[in-house]
Length: 277
Image 1 (cartoon, rainbow, N blue to C red):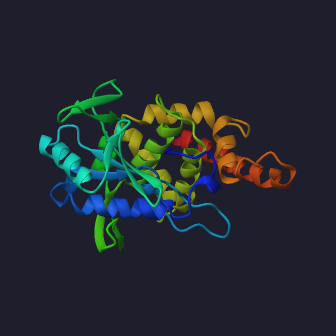
Image 2 (cartoon, rainbow, N blue to C red):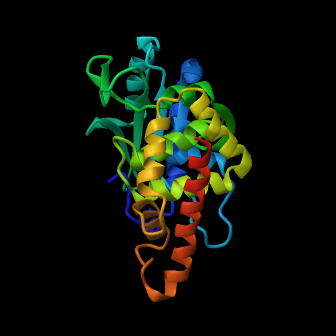
């Protein structure tokens, strides 16, 4: 299972293992770093401040890597070989490795002028097509990450991570874009990313505005997600965020006030983002 319905369902060591997987993969692909960018929940974790008090922070079991569509085909074969040499097997259209009885996943994503949901590269390896990955590659920032890889070796890497504007566009599409899952985890990531990004809320909002000016292919899906799922307190986005953070107890009397606060924050954010795009 790649995503859980509530925060408490995520294993406490899961996100740390995902970071170890990232260090393992990134360290083995040094020749191609300029062609890769980290997106998804692990990117949210790396670019935000740690949670305050009891606030749930970003959690994930995935490493999502964006790749240029027109990159040298050697990258795809190198990715496959590297991942397989590190114990990641190709299963169910993604790379999977079991560590401590937990499944870690590596997903490959690209962008391009196509309506297809995936493209086939390197001897039948499908890569998901996600509008907005190109902007994430163009606006990547370097984040220093230290820790152990999956072999237990100490590592220090500079990871290319999506900038706040493209990352927010991608997360909104993950929730409510054309192929959105409307998962509570994505709604939680959206709110947490804006409120806790190290650059500050104002910089994130400004970066999001730039995505429209730069014709990010994912901006239409991001706008649709905001309009369709986030504009009222009882809409699916705010409710999903509250349910995820409060472990499906968001409608209980003891959590109703906190749930309402979370839902109102989601609506306020949606209104502010829609006002600038």
